[in-house]
Length: 240
Image 1: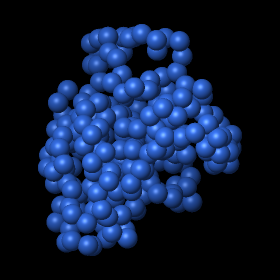
Image 2: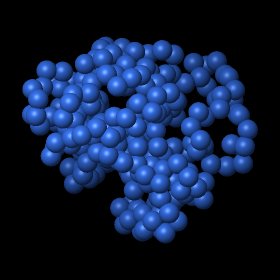
Image 3: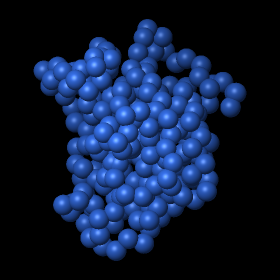
């Protein structure tokens, strides 16, 4: 998911995952468990504020994202690619001054981040934050773009539709990615984009402002999936 990227603290606390579907399968998810404090990033956008929480289990992506946020890289970036009932994407810093109607979305700082797949613990549920990347044909290791990321909206799936997705996943991952009962239940209840699981690194989730994502997800777009009226990140900042 790139180039319009689709083939892109030691303190312990008791923390509950904010979204309805648990990010981790297993019996221990029935109650809160101690995990290391997670960094949070506020995206102040022209549609409203979105708060992202970053996973400590994807440290390369977490640290790279925090570095870019602290450097001001994302400030004034457009949400340059929006596909209704799928995802919203940003991370091309050249979009700050992009003229209306111009195709954008090809730029990132020029390096990649090694894949950190943590499926089925982290998957493409609604509100998941994942790294865009070049297509498998050019990027067989499925390394992530250094800057471009997307927030999942997706749709709700029936059991029969998930069976079809599983067949697609079997083909794309040599049978290595299997939708667990817990993951399937989440897609049936709250939705997401399961066909991307195990192929794009999920490194965080929205913990505040999912209504803003919903609003942005349904804006009118042109033939290149760029919103007709610019929607941008005014400022990104680390808040924890």
